[in-house]
Length: 399
Image (tube, helix red, strand yellow):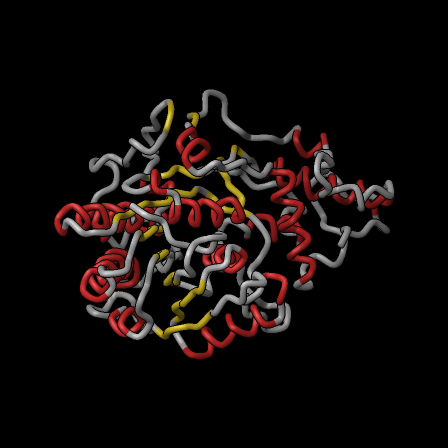
């Protein structure tokens, strides 16, 4: 299957990117533009679409010199039948699609209508619109799934890879729709069911284009430029919340337990994974378990406090340079709760097929802290359990 795209010698191609204001989508958008693709992003309102365009206009270095075009299409409710029809029909020809739009929350008044159906129906609705209107030009669709569609808590396997799915006994529809079920369980089920629906759709329809999925785990990294900020009150993605909590003093009395998730990946690696899964012929028809390593809250605290010490010692400019990762605070790391005999992961496919080289935890957290500070978060010294003392009162975080 030929791969069109934003690479020298190939004709310009157009990508439909759903969920354009999302954390992961914002980084995918940056990478698509850097690679020379024209992009149509979907947003739930005109205001959100305009915010994406303004954020790009304020960051001209993102756009490649070949002169990429970026537009948006409003899709108010992805769960409705035909919700993507107009976005597809009015932007032909489309060569690729990356589908990131999906509910990402853990509290629901109605688990079925607030989480499960939007994830499943949104996926099937998009694929149906692409089948009906874009098949003559479309090469591949990449679906943002999750490690939630791979791991099987509490009955973990020794090693996880792309062949793994959660057991039906531990993650099923009856459990997910129950109002008494924890919200994170319903969310995990929505990712499992949505990805299964995508593969079933492809199998049933025998299309001229194919599918790849990205199954990323907890995702840290710099905040999106298009993040809506009202004063100092704004919401970051769920994974980054723990870094913000550490930075803003919520860990002053104790470093909270890390469980249940100890695996992480940097959002910029996730963005590269999507674009390479989209353009590399050998990626078609495959799942990719995108995971960079393990973390704990103690190690996050160790990075944040290590940045303070680097500032105190006049070494802040070294931190973040290649080969100059921050030194973790040893006192924080002593609180590490990473369990013995923890399950392992095999990310060989993502390394070999997509050529990923994963960002370290130290670099990912360092860059996240800096982006939070650019948003005005953590201007004072973060208070971390067991580390607040007179010798550090004048220390501030590096910019």
